[in-house]
Length: 244
Image 1 (tube, rainbow, N blue to C red):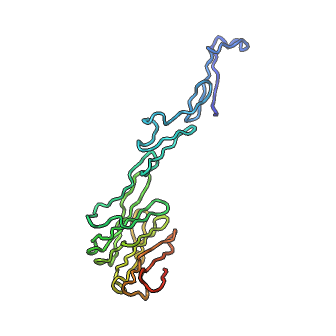
Image 2: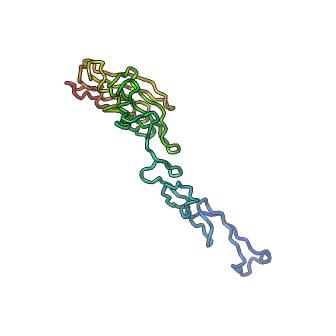
Image 3: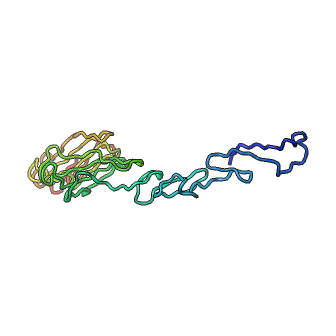
C-alpha cells in the first residue's frame, strides 16, 4: 500500500553519509492512508471491527473488515444503513381493535414508500375502510405521513379490502373498493391518488366500469405500472374482461 516515508538519521551521522548506519539509531517515519497504520516499515490494514465500541457500526449490525475500511450491515429483520438499525414494523396511532390494519400492503420498488390497508376502519362509516402511507428511510425508519379514505366513502365499502398498489417511486397509489355501490350493490370502484414528496395527497380519479352492475366487485385486484401511468384492475364477478 502506498505511503509517504522519510528517514531520520542521528545528527552525528550527518557528517559522513558513507559510514555504516546503525539501524538502531535510524527512524523511518511514514504517513499511511486512512485505515492503515505503520508497523515493521510498512503500512498495515487496521481491523476496524476488532473493537465494537469504536467500529462505528450499530450494535445490531454486523461489522466486516475490508482493506482500509469496514462495512456495517443490519442484522436480518432490521432496516438501516448499518450505522443506524431499526425495527421496520409499521403502526398507526388511530387504529383500533378490528380495523384489520395490514390486511393489504404494498411497497414501492425504490423502497421509499409503504401502503397499508385497514379494511374495517370506520372513518367514513362502519367498515368503510382506509389506507395508510408511510415514508421509509435508512436513518429515521418508517414515518406515517398520510391516511387515505374515499372522498365519498360509505359504510361497508371496505376501501382497501382486496387490493392496494403503489407505483415504483411511491408517487401514485391505487386502492380498490370492491363493495362500493355506484353502479349497483357491490359493483365496486378504484380510487387513484397522487402523493407529494412530503406525503401530501391529491385525489386524482375514481374509476368505475362504464357498464358496471351489482356484484361486479370491480377493484378486487389492482396493479400500477412502475411509472404510475397505467393501471390494470379486475372485476371479480363481471362477465367481461375489463382493463383500465
